[in-house]
Image (cartoon, rainbow, N blue to C red; front, side):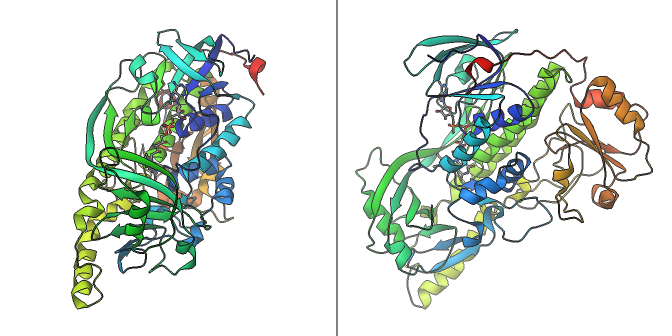
Length: 547
Ligand SMILES: Cc1cc2nc3c(=O)[nH]c(=O)nc-3n(C[C@H](O)[C@H](O)[C@H](O)COP(=O)(O)OP(=O)(O)OC[C@H]3O[C@@H](n4cnc5c(N)ncnc54)[C@H](O)[C@@H]3O)c2cc1C
């Protein structure tokens, strides 16, 4: 029987995208993490998220696994980058949104990576491998947490092994990464608030040879079908005949539906269809009333749910895990006080709120709302209708071109960010305007040797010295006294981009402060790690159950 320790520094409840990302972020920073996940196998037939955003790819790059994901992803970015609206796969193209979801084939200045389409189980597989490879991370697969009790000194969990034997574990900190149906949210008395979509959906995973062998009316990475009878989305999962579809406005829970017929209706032809899986679901726009208890934090879907329109859900989860990960590591390593952890909710809740708003607003513009019986007409009438609809579909732009949200999210009001009072770009869902204002993601830049500026940052804080005349000796000394890991990197070529002599960058690549010389770097450093006096680290070895 596997022996589990009585006490661990961090217990992660749930090994989905949030839990695995948190484990990697913490584990890479030398923190021992125990992850409890009931699913022994990842179900390839229920792909869920397909969009790994530009920002998530940048995190994967930092973890050294971006190339790994690209290598195993069955749809290379080069295959297709556009979302196309069609009357059917063999019908007429209505309009297209180019380079959707940050899919581009040549490097761009604004980001270190392009987006990537990959089914979620495959992304989870890559994350599982990366987590398991870390000596600090232990995955208990096939186990589940049955109860959580929060407290000021730690959180207690009862964990069941595969034989349903209970084990008690106390954790200094417990991360509830157990999705919408887990146990952690209710254990800390947090509640989802919000609403549900009114249009029911049916996801279908299927295989069809015809869709590979017969020429489609156009090439896209996702196809939005505005059909006379049915509407929805479709896309390839691989280049070997496996597809996904979401049929909108079909209630498989109350109607007798035939998924084969539905897929044929979307395709617009009597093709061969082998259904592999079906899932009925409704969109939900939900956000918890609070992200934490004492020693328990909610991460990812456990804290917020948004419709898949725009492909933000899983990416927002990874963003949460990254944000909390470095902070928790700093607290456990003793170079930040526990008050740093209050900034997690302060920073991430507004991002979730904005994401829910953006994805939720697209509920008003689902495929059935654009249906017209004559849209597929081959003659002039059909052509005019499609031309008119192409204009009306401009309302979908923010769903496919959302770099303002994906790269432009920021934390300007955070208690651990020092504002500089200078103007910041107007918030925009669609347009990303690079800006090094405090709280923003450090603007990306390619350096002369072809590396990304992100590749130069340290694992802890980084002081970018953009004017090499500035003496940073006091910074290094203050960081050493406070025990804060600080790398100093000279990059005078980025002075114009960042608009300051010095930029202090956090471990999550966000700007904590920018300016010229300061008298008291010690005070500033204390502010960006939570302000109060630091505590000593608490070691808790997990050797006993490490694989
Ligand atoms: C149809 C659909 C399409 C989507 N498309 C996209 C997209 O294109 N892009 C995108 O970014 N997102 C998308 N999403 C959303 C995405 O799937 C979720 O946001 C993401 O899976 C959430 O990750 P998570 O780790 O927070 O939660 P989950 O993925 O739900 O993982 C929670 C984990 O906790 C485990 N667990 C549950 N209870 C316990 C317990 N008691 N003890 C221990 N472990 C437990 C579960 O087994 C699970 O592994 C889509 C979702 C759906 C339904």
